[in-house]
Every structure is written in structure tokens, then in C-alpha cells.
Length: 201
Image (spheres, rainbow, N blue to C red):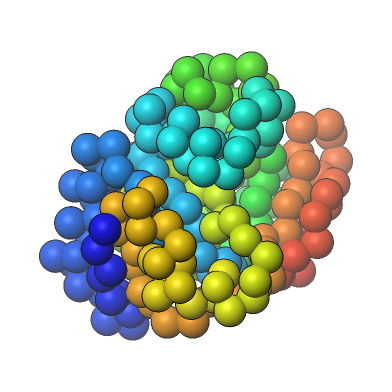
């Protein structure tokens, strides 16, 4: 396992390239978002997704999975949304929101049985640089744990997941407030978890 220091205002593309090569080979990373630190992998690599599900004990096919995209046109490859929902995303993304939409069949086998997918476009240049360089989405889920210091400090996360992840990106102390989750699968958007950010409707 390796710790890479990448700052949002001074992104080292060589490190981003290293992260992407790790993802392409099925590796797992811990990386910053505009909310909490997250576990991630190539969202189109089924074996890597299963590894993350195992770490998070997400064994049920009903567990929601979320992906990070770099723009709404990429979202359209993996999720179904209408013009009203497009405008909702346009008004709030990039930002600290997870929008739940019906999933399209392009997602890998790990998504089968899950009719929905969470969509994130975080306001964090490190996360977006990874997705752009990868050329596809990354699976994202918050780093598990209850201890506040542990969930905010990349060094402590690296110790805890030394045998389970390949790279930890250290971008400084993280946050505790997760994204606001908006369910867009049944007509009007419904906030099902209040987190960071105020939704512009």
C-alpha cells in the first residue's frame, strides 16, 4: 500500500496517472471528495466492486451503489433521467449531492439486481481528475468507521486498510458530513439523507 500526497490546488498528474493505473489493474483506493473520504475502484471492474462490497459488508443486492462521473454526459451512459432531472443536476453539480436514478444496463454484473445507481459529480478536482484520466466512472462509497479522527485522517485510514487498499491519497484532514442523497426514481426528487449542501430545485 502506498500513500500519495495530492493537494487539490496543486495536482500532480504523475500521481494521478499512478492512481489510474492502479484502478485499471483492479486496485482499490481511498481518495478525497467534496464531503468525506471515500473508497473507490474502477466502476466497470466487477471483481474490484466485489472487493469493496466485501470491505463494506454490502452483500445484499438491494444495497445502493454509487459512481462518480466527470460530467452529465457521462452520467447519461449509466443512468436514466428526464429533462427536469437534467436541469436539477445542472443546477447542483459539481456539488455534494448523490442523485439516485434508474440504472442502465451498461453497468457491470455487480449492479445486477440493483435497479438504481447513485450518481456523484463532486466539487473536488482530485476526484474529477481521476475520473477524467481513467476515462470512465469510479465506484464510490464512504470509508467505513465511527471514530471521527480515523475517518478524517488519511494516515489513520492507511493503517486501518493497509492490507485491503492499494493507494491512499492524502489531501489533508477530511470532513465528516456526507453528501445529501436525492432520490429521483419516483417523480419529484425526494431528499432521503440530509448532508452537506442545500439543494437548488
